Length: 311
Image (cartoon, rainbow, N blue to C red):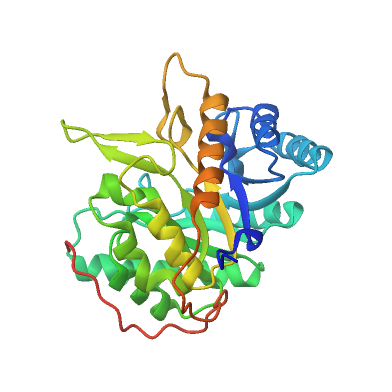
């Protein structure tokens, strides 16, 4: 019998990569037989920016469809908000999302760790650590957990920095979101980054990609690119990961980047990617024989792992 924890992993997806509107997002998930969603935007509007009436309509639509929200994606600390920007903007967004997460019965909010804006690395690091501590304190008081993604920002591409962030903030309101596909565009091995971070991962994004001859990134169905999706899933299984695999295929719609692939049906491609992920999971016939005990909610971090990388 395979030790792979299919029954403990929730298959879901970031809905706005299937369709802009809520109905289209929910229809795509229903085609896959999935009853959960990760929310980022509806009709091109970020969740925190929806009017109260639009948000109320969204919650009714989710309830009517029997769909649960597992996480929401914020813009806090992302590529559009450098470390020199106004923290008040992020705190305001977090406060709005706290109210909306309470209505959605959702605890997880995705964040990043602020792109640099010309600061020396030590100053950049100090500001990131200080800001994240403030955000985590605000999140804890609202009953939320912030999920730092390996994407834009100071701790996005290096395990030692991500572990330092967790250690410095030292709060159960901060954990990690691991995006398997980000290693291809950022130029690192996803399994190598994941290994020291796996005990602290509370949410996972799934995408796959290849580098083209001209140095661009082309996204593929899960398992068909160079992101080593299967290897990452085995690492997560070995560390007792219990949570969601959230599909973010980037095949047709990338609303956060304002990109749409002309001539393609986004929902069909999203569903194809979801079926590819399901097939990949079924093909994995086991994790390492001696998997460590599950650690879904680790305590304070002891920073012992390092990963070389650019400053």
